[in-house]
Each structure stands twice: as structure tokens, then as C-alpha cells.
Image (cartoon, rainbow, N blue to C red; front, side, top):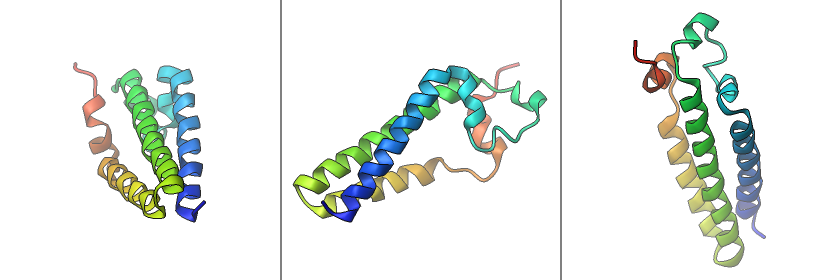
Length: 112
């Protein structure tokens, strides 16, 4: 098994476990999201925690599926398939990363 397939498998398991944690915690899992947990409590109340937690769970599950498929294809097809899966995961990951918490969570703001 190539190192790329091993890395894909380890990350897939890690992201799968974290997505299960978000599924079990439901809206309480929103506090685990980076940037959201550092906001003041009054500010956090302005956001839809349930939707945030569901979106994070779905993102983590998608990452897990991409990396697991990279691990499987890296094992049975070619080691380059694992590298391609890692690149696809990185593109999706960095597309969702925001420096500013306001920008990161603006789609979850409750309508007032």
C-alpha cells in the first residue's frame, strides 16, 4: 500500500469519526467549529447552530468519502489516484476556509 493511500485512509477515518460526532451532538456540535467557539455567547445566538452543525457534518462526511475512495483506488488502481484524491480534498477544503468569522458564518445568520 502506498503512502498516499495510507494517508487517505487515515484522514478518511478521522473525518468520518468527527462527522459522526457532529451527527450525535446535533446543534450542540456547532461549538466545535473553529471561529464560532471564540465568539461571545450573545453573538453566537444570532446564528442557526443546527444548520451549521448539519453543514459541517455533511462536509466532513464528503471529505471522508473522497479520501476513502482515494485510499481504495490508490491501493487497487494506482498510487496516483490517492494523490488526486488528496488534491481534490484540498481544493474543497480551502474553498470553505475563511479568515474572517463574520464572512465564514454569514450564511447561517438568523433572519431578524
